Image 1 (cartoon, rainbow, N blue to C red):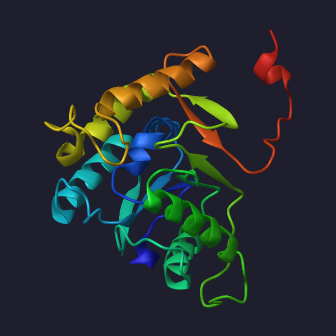
Image 2: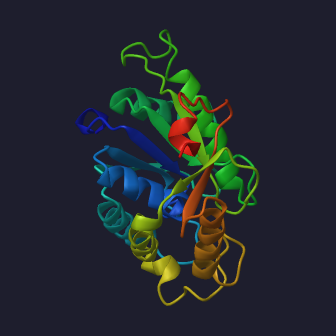
Length: 239
């Protein structure tokens, strides 16, 4: 399966189908529209979720990926609700990284109310490191992407930068709502993943708040562990 995957510029990981849409759907839609290749990896099938079946959620995930303009989307089939960063799971993610050789990885922020989001963050962070170890499973050439961007789901902690996604926000909304079993007729009911009573309203309100921080309609925030290099501040703040 992996050898058939197209190389991408950005590789987005989520613990469950719909995570990447909630946290970074606007960013992914924007980058795809700009001509960058985007791949999406769902670590679990979301089989422990109250709503929807794994089969239904897989169809919804594929539809959302098409809306965002992703080149492909796969599911690693790790256990929902029991997600851990053990060696086998880490290497499943590392093999994808080595195969598609992205410049950027995105994954959930490591501090979150949902244990699977915490585990996904640790798992992908370890996979990023181990994908660059030449002596570890040397039958697949080692490769380590330049950076990991952490996106937010339940938390809104300190961030490193905010991306203007205003022109692509309708795509994000469409992609989120493609997960109809989670957000369709249930869109106004409590959703465990966000811990709020009106999840769609929460997502939009949060993204409006981030947009306001940079003087735009909508934004998505990301955190990186290392300083963000800026070659020429005048390109950002100059007249």
